[in-house]
Length: 302
Image 1: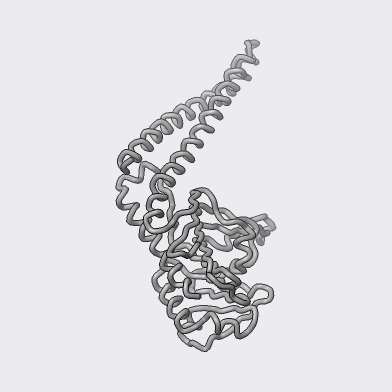
Image 2: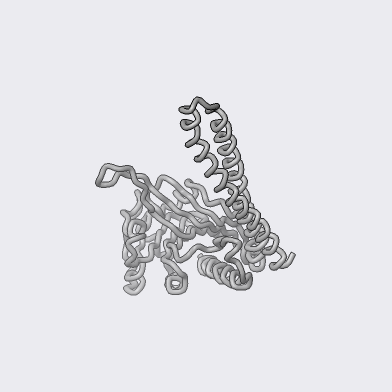
């Protein structure tokens, strides 16, 4: 199926959805009008249960249409993702799994020691792939924590929002090394300036340029020397300049976790009616995938 045929089919579904939304508005309005008539009919000694039955019928119909409208919206995004984005990903990688509404688990992200404290994980655009023999995963993630503000009101705070990758490496690494790119954005000052996780120690590498851009934490002093080689530092510094968003990296055991502070939603599925130029979105997705593959290439030699 061509891009045009796919989008024409999805737009037809979208048109049906829009018609149903208008009907839902009318049935919802009918429910309100029926509710108003119940006391009017009752006070005039009329059959007040008739507008009650009509109201219940309108409410039930409104709920059924609302349920279907939301189902269509999810179906549209699912089809657009699997029939469009999935093909773009498969151009460059061996795609093992793609789920547009899935994210990584709480424990998987917690294991990286990158994010400090958080209570909830939301996200989307998950996929797992192999590139040049290296397995990696990617998703968008929003990590939030619950707290009480100055007015003693329960609030939710965003600890991190952006893309997260995990990259497998061929041999185990002793200890843990965490590298956080510095910056001025207050949005991510918690993850950048948070106290080193339990068992982690802040260190200075001695490379003045690198230390001015990145903060380094290790589980044991000296472990960073096996990871932060001149070649690794050059690659990481280059990524910091090229990637749209700040980088936070955890190297431990047999894997690497890379968090990219929000620089725009990667592989975001747009509303069907906005996708008038498929080639524009193809180019955007290819550029986003290239960013991720550049990260895989940079960390593969570890």
